[in-house]
Length: 471
Image 1 (tube, rainbow, N blue to C red):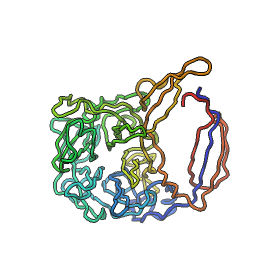
Image 2 (cartoon, rainbow, N blue to C red):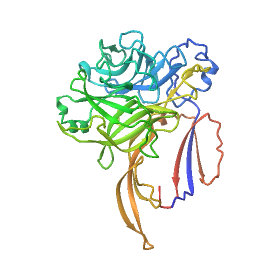
Image 3 (cartoon, helix red, strand yellow):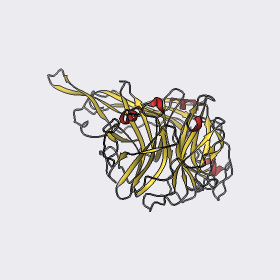
Image 4 (cartoon, rainbow, N blue to C red):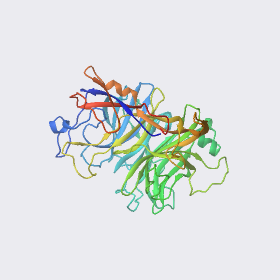
């Protein structure tokens, strides 16, 4: 029932790309922009910084007034290693071709972020009715889940009055420190959002102003945590307890990776599937030892209503299915809505070195290609080997017995899981020199060499002609 006789592969080779971003000089020994070494390994499909080190994507958003996408990212303007955390800034009309803007937020300028402008999120019509970015201002280093916490992370903000061209920082933090009495491993990367599910849980009325903020972190020797806050005005935040709480270094299922010891870059979304069911989706980065994972989970909220007592240590969110966003060198998930209201997923792709080794090529790190994310429904699965039981990165939404022609009965199941696919807009990168080749190969070990000299390619694979059974 698992036989897959054939795979059809469609390949498009691309030999050119859009105009490169503006270049600035690197102040270190590695190759300078424009040199052959600098250009040699720079990808053509992925977002790249001007030069030097980049990591987490931060606060992407679509501005309806200017019809532009804004993307921020962690950037070191001085070196190809991590440090001097700055928000680099780029804009795009199509989510594919990007133009550099001046750096949006810099350290060393203000009391509350003079050692680093760490990751965060964006919200329209927020503080003072302006577009606002919420981020972590850093005043003490080093910060790592294995070290003693120095209380140097603060939730701060900046607003814009010129459609994102420039940003003005607030004079004081919105939330200065983690909740009292907690021995935290970290407390950073604020994500601001609205939630019908949480409004229902707490009994809030959205029309009166109801806004939520997540901060990712953990508790030493206990486990990772996501801290939840609520405010009516985006300014006066009330701590509501843990949204999500897990035991250190454990896992949800064999398919779900390890919770680790500390969470980072948490994002919350409510996504409706084609059946009309709304799923509470969280994405987060789990720091473990030795591995770390970009993870996702959908789930429900325990209890509900004003005055309902819940266990403050347990966390409100109960996961129903948990998975890994990507098992490559991907990290630091973030989601934004585009002009078509698609949920677009981005991540940071690391180089194969550590954070302290300078790159001879003069740059380090790229961002993933944009991916559309949603809840995928797979119907008519005959689970003959009984794999779809217990916990996993799916939920079984329906089961029914089906009579077969031989007089036997099989169980047909419908599952739901997180679906991810490259954003269709990436086809804009194809040009008149693109070469299309189609090949059909079997998965039993055969191969075919395609006649192409292109340096870049798209691979579209379709599994076909398999016997009905486990998909």
